[in-house]
Length: 212
Image 1: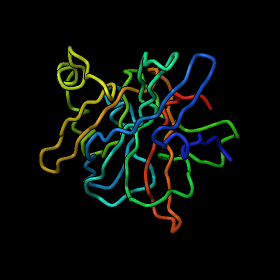
Image 2: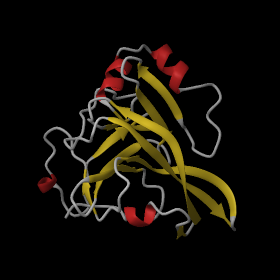
Image 3: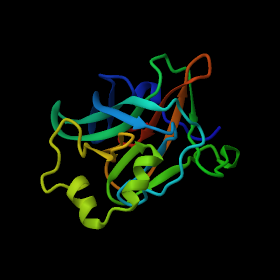
Image 4: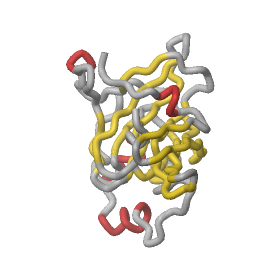
């Protein structure tokens, strides 16, 4: 089986992780709805690669709530930093009993080794789960438009680092919700949760903040 993080533990408010540098306390923060007119989901750095392919698994079109799972970084029980550990698109309010890698295009899970995963590259420190309808509009924006909306002079305040929400397609309401990606640039995988009946419960991108 390919690599899968311990998402059941990560997606638990109050969960605490520790390593040699200190500890990480998990908080869950609603970040509004993500509007998916087509029911397709794209995971990407929208400031760098809005043309990314959608995942092969689709969801019912409409508005779906999203959550940012924030790791509060503690040193001697005092908060010294906070980082977004995961971004979750909630599709169905049901217990998740299994997780599988989200794949796009011709990616093949069978080709993955035990420590491998598919992920999207981040070069601008931002991540999203969005509908292609919104991202297609973003592709047409020039650099000044992108900076004005998604790179404000004053970064968003806590509790969710990098949280920006913008409607890009007025006709459908399709929007892009960005969060800061963990410690910054990298390659981050997305996993799909399923309920006991096999239906999709959520998409979760792990920004690899907390220790295994």
